[in-house]
Length: 232
Image 1 (cartoon, rainbow, N blue to C red):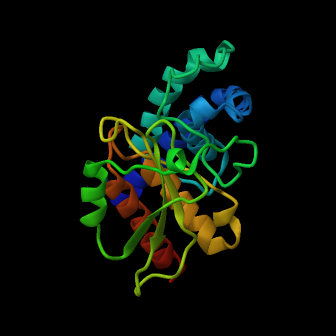
Image 2: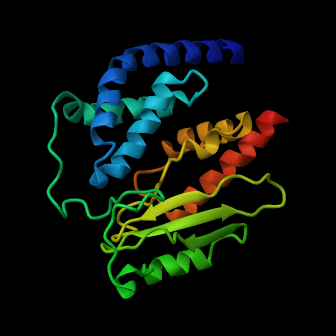
C-alpha cells in the first residue's frame, strides 16, 4: 500500500474510533464537574481533562495508538462515570492535593510545619536535570502529607520563553508518578502557547503510567520544540 493510502486508512480508522468514543464525552464532562472541587482527585482530574480535550478538540490530534490507549482508560473510568461516587475518606489518597495558587481558605500552621521537605531521591534527580530546567519549591504551598510542589522554568536559549510548569510530586515517589497542574489559562494567551499545550496533553498520554519528573520535563521541552517547528 502506498504511504498516502496508508495515511488515508489510518485517518479513517482514527475518525471511526473517535466517533465510537464520543459516547463518553458527556459522562466525562459530568465526572469532571463532579470532582473538580475534590482535593483528593486532582491527579484523576488532570487525566480526565486530557481525555476530554482529545475527544472534543479537532485540533488535538494524537496517534491512533494513543487514541486506543484513551479507550482503555475510558473503559476503566466507565463505572465511575456512570455511578456517582462518594468522596474518598480522609487519607485515602494522600498523594493528591489541590494544585494552584489559591490557598486563602487554608488555616496556616507554624512555620516549621509549612516547610516542604524534599526527599533525597528527588533532590538527586533535580540535581541531575539538564541545566535548561530551573526547578524550585512552590512558595504557595505547604506540605503536610509529604507531597512536594514544584515550579519549573524552561531556560533554553534555543527555545522561546513559555509559562512555568507546576508539578506535584507524591510522597511515595517514584512509586507514584508526578503530575502536571494543567493550567490551560496560562497556555491560552496565543496560538503558539495553545499549540504547546496541545502537544503536551497528547505526549503525556503516551508516557508510561509510572514516569519520572525528568521524563515529564523532557516531554514539556519536546512539546515547545515541536510547536516551534509547526510555526516555522
